[in-house]
Structures are given as structure tokens and as C-alpha cells.
Image 1: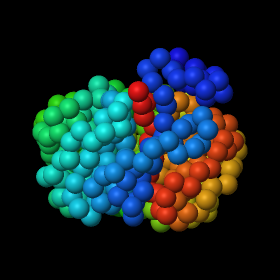
Image 2 (image 1 turned 30 degrees about the vertical axis):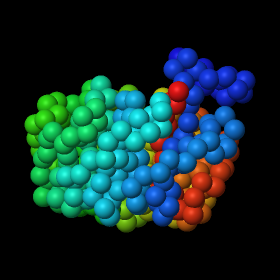
Image 3 (image 1 turned 45 degrees about the vertical axis):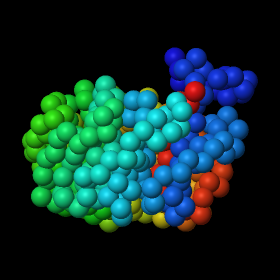
Length: 310
């Protein structure tokens, strides 16, 4: 209902009942986050953080920011856009995904070769599992019980982690992709996992339950990243400067141009967002893959997420 209400709210200039939808982008080299109004594409605010904010993910009513080079995780209170916690103890935090209830963030730690469980309310690490290799991108299934984790930018194996007990994570299996993998994403129908490549123009689709390969697709230049809205997959290639819109059957419906360097991709409120390392531009697309706005937010921007501010 909230997603359906957003286009009207944006056109009319009215906030939703729960607050106003914003995009938060990292200003990697400038030690702050940039809040962008999704209705106008204009910068609404800048929020100072610890140095080197690289990735950002919405987790419940918070946003979790990973600072790779300093070993810090910032927990931002989304309604007030204020820093709630600065967390140490994750050596090289890379990316995060929220638990289903929004209480925890599962954070990859490339320094310790682990996934850590961060309690965002208390600002404490409450669980870890060692994976033996260098985790980066990860995705959580729709039941909230299983993570798939890419073990590097060009990963020979993927780790499957049982997270049903957030304080006691367990390595359940490993999957060997048909190429060196980069990122992963679960389709909304719960049936499949899409795996992107770090070394070639290809995608792989796996059966989520049986963990077997069911299809391979062509893609633009590696590395790619993927997100989903409903029955549609959105695949970016930052090196090719493209956003491909796929059906869940893999067929390409539309291709749009992106600023080169737009790698990470997020979805929310019926929009798809990317941010460019090369130009510092944030782009927003509608569900069909048509660009809604492009805003330069920083000299370089690695990641972006959606939040609702008061």
C-alpha cells in the first residue's frame, strides 16, 4: 500500500502517513551521507559520519553504514537522520542486509572472513560465523532464515548461512557457481537466487531450495548487481553503464543507460536507485526502467538506500 501511495505523494508534495521517503547516498570521500528527496531529486540534507562511508542499508527504522577502511559501522536513526550508534568490533565491514524483523543487520566482515550479527537497537555485535574466505555481497531469503554470501569480488564459492538464530549463525553449505561470482539476490517469488558474475558478462539462476543451477543468462560487463520489484529483476553493469530490466523468466524487457561506475542497486517505494563511483551521481528509475531523475550528490558515491524521515 505504501509503495502504491508513493507516486501520488511525490506528485502532490504530500508526505506519507509514516513520514517522508528519502534516498540516502554515501559521500565516500567526504565523510557524510546525502539525503535526497525522492519527489524532486533535490538534496534535502547532509549528515556527517565517520570517514569513508562506503555501503548503506535500511534496517527497520535505522540505516546501517559500513566504513571499510576504518573498521566502523554507523547506525543512523532514519526518522531523525541522526547517528544512534558508532559500532566497533567488525574489522572490515563491507555490506549488510536486515533480518526479517528489522532488529538485526547481518554484516560481512572481510577482515575476519566472517558474517557478524549486529543488534541495531543496542549497537552491539551479538553473533558471528567464520566462513574461511572473504565475504562481501550477501542476500537474505524471504523466510528470513538463510543467507547466500559471495566470498570476494570474484568468488569461486558461495556460502549458505543459517541465520534462524541471529546470535548463533551456522555455515550450512557451499555452492560452486559456473563463473567467479560477485553478488547475489533472491527473487520475490522465493523460488530462485540470482548470482551475478565478477569476471564475465553472465548471470546464473539457482533453485533456492535445492541449490542447483537452473539457467544462465547473458549480461553486460562484469561485475553486475541485481535487485527486484515484484516480478521484475533489475541488473546493473557499472562498467557498461547499463540497467537491464528482466522478467523473472530471464527475458530482457528494457535497457536503460546509467552513469559509468553505477554498480550497487537498491529498490524501494516503487523506485530503483543507483549511485556512481565515477561521477557521484544518483539515478532513480521507475518500475519500467525509465529514469525519473539524476542528481549529483558527491564526488564519488558507492551506495544508496531508502528510508522514511519524520
